Image (cartoon, rainbow, N blue to C red):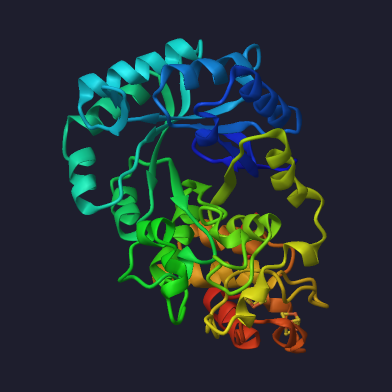
Length: 388
Ligand code: SF4
Ligand code: SF4
């Protein structure tokens, strides 16, 4: 397993994490087998959003004796109304189910207190312009949550929430289809009605989503990914919007190669599904390579770097994807924040060393003008000055 730092938590999360949603309704024995297997294979971050008592109790039993080595992403604002799960911003009700979480998981803190499902601006107002956010801030002050997260599917709303300065972790739906999905169709539509298939043409990577990922990386806001497989629609030829399925390893590679992403959370029902996801760790680079999406007649993305790494290796040792990512971040901000310059100059090889050989451009399936980008990076970041 590999691990990435959650900057504001100060802890490392496994790059493949566990989405707990499919554990609902399963027997305690099944839950134990699956969770135990995941932990045994190095998974240490778990997303836990259901408020149902039997779900919490079963997973809690599987965690027994190991809670302190795990990162729990527990949701705030998931409650039961009658027999139905519901989202709530009611403080008393949210508190009741948050305290229930602590009790059932035999813990006095949640690593990531995840404000549940804030998607629209109306959701934002309900969550951030009310007592709900004050309640969540209080949990952090009291040490009951170690950092504040929010789950969201909409880039503009996520940006707005990041602007508040209160968010430490963003749980966001990321996959190759959502990143190019036309703005006039909702993602819910894509999942619920297989609307992926109805899209005539995926014309461009949504630059707002890319900016969001880069903003998170720049601010040290960790992204944990949901819908890594696009609700499994990407895994089958018949439902993939690209006319051809992507493998789990390709989907995971796509998510993990977005800036800011710390962990791709995979919803698994069985130990075998855990292993399917973890095959990513042993997969050869060509098995992970998702650039086949450019072969789809529906996909016309040209000239924009998606940080896939397909253009490697560079004879000068430059990691083009990283240089381009920092270049794009510098372009986003207009001026270069010190953190980005620091990351850029921390690379083993920078654009300074580019000899314009063009090998990378011949390999890039997305038609990116890499040599021009290297020249711009040289100009923007300037000559390296040693400050030591
Ligand atoms: S330049 Fe092309 S191949 Fe290289 S990382 Fe960007 S999109 Fe991928
Ligand atoms: S053009 Fe520059 S970045 Fe690309 S392979 Fe050649 S030296 Fe490396």
